[in-house]
Image (tube, rainbow, N blue to C red; front, side, top):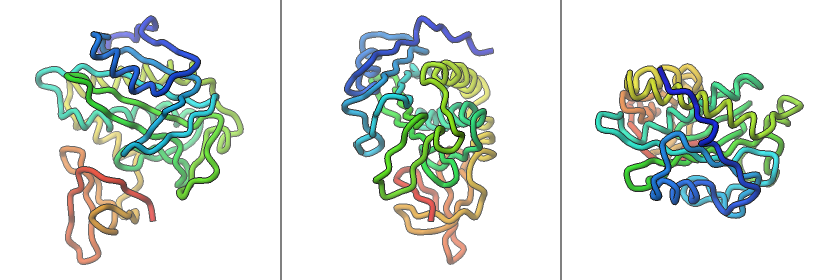
Length: 234
C-alpha cells in the first residue's frame, strides 16, 4: 500500500523562476521523496528541450521528486507513472488521451506536459497543466480545461488530487514493476494505427515495447523502436 500523502510536504509559492529548478535544489539539499512545490506563476518555466512554457496564474505548475532505489524500474519510465497519474485526475473533468512521450491531450490539442530531470540520485518531475488558460499563438493545437469543460479546478485542489494519484502509481511501479503502469498507459493512449510524425519518420502508433519505448510501424510494414524525441499527431 502507498504511504498516505503528507500534506506538509506540499508547498506553494506565488512566483518563482522554475519549479523544476527549485525542486532540484531541494533534492540536492536532502528534501524527502513526496515533496511537491507549486507556483502561481513561473518566470522561467520550460518544457522539453528547453522550450519556454507560458505560465500565467490559474494553471498548475508543479514539481515533485522521486529518490531512486535499488531495484526500481528504469528512471525514464517515471514519465509513464506521471502520465497515468495525471490522466486519472484530468479524466474526472474531461476525456483525455496520453501521447508519447510526455503529453496529455484533449481533442488532439495539448493540455499538459511532463518534464523529467535528474538531480543526483533523484528524479525531478515537473508537470504543467492548462487549467484556466492556454496559449493562442502556437504552431500546434493547445487547450485548457476551462476551454473544454467550461470551468477549471483551482490549482491547489488539483495538485492535492494529483499528489494522491501519483503516490499510488509510484507505489505500484515500485512493487509490481512497469507492467501495470504500461497497461494503464496504453488504455489511456491513442489507439494503435494513429498516424504520427517522429524523428525516425512518419508512421503508425504500434504501442509501447516492454521498456516503455514507442513502437512505430512504417509504410513498408517494418517497425522501429523510438526511445527519445518529439512525436506529433498527423
